[in-house]
Image 1 (spheres, helix red, strand yellow):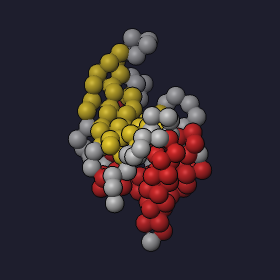
Image 2 (image 1 turned 90 degrees about the vertical axis):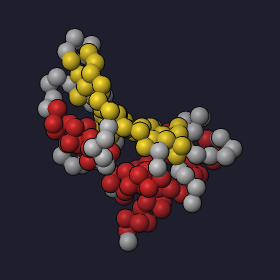
Image 3 (image 1 turned 120 degrees about the vertical axis):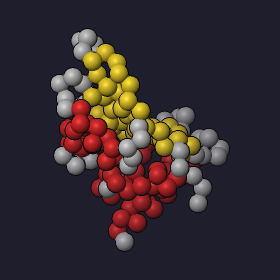
Image 4 (image 1 turned 180 degrees about the vertical axis):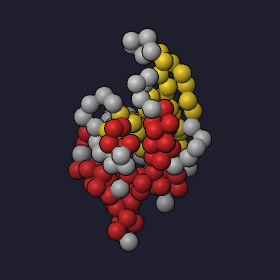
Amino acid sequence: MQATFHWLRIETFCYATEKEDLVSDTFRQIAGTDEFQIDISESEHGNQMLILQHMITKQRDMDALFARLGKDLMQNFLDDMENRIDEDCVFYTRLDKQKAVQGIYAVAHHGDVISITGKVASNPAKKEVAMRNMTEFLQKIIGQAAE
């Protein structure tokens, strides 16, 4: 099977008011690796914050990431595909970071998130093709979860 994405990026912020080890552990669980980049920045209020980021380029790691998120979330992505992929064939989702810390993966409707962004492989590079490829990928992940 061809690659689903050219790349996937997972990113979150750890604010001064949050427990760094808790956010890092949650990020590690989602990313599936201990090898991620941590940058130090400053929040809008002048407090130190960390930016955690990981890039995925291997298909098996992409499959594993989506499988970890669970079939309910995959179904949510399928149901909302039109809003998840833009005209540049980029997939977007934002997970609720506070729920993720509890091991619950759900789409966020606020700003405290773990974002997952990826360039969907599609030839030709059209939103409709990207949506079709992403739908096949998600259905495959859901099918594997059911086995």
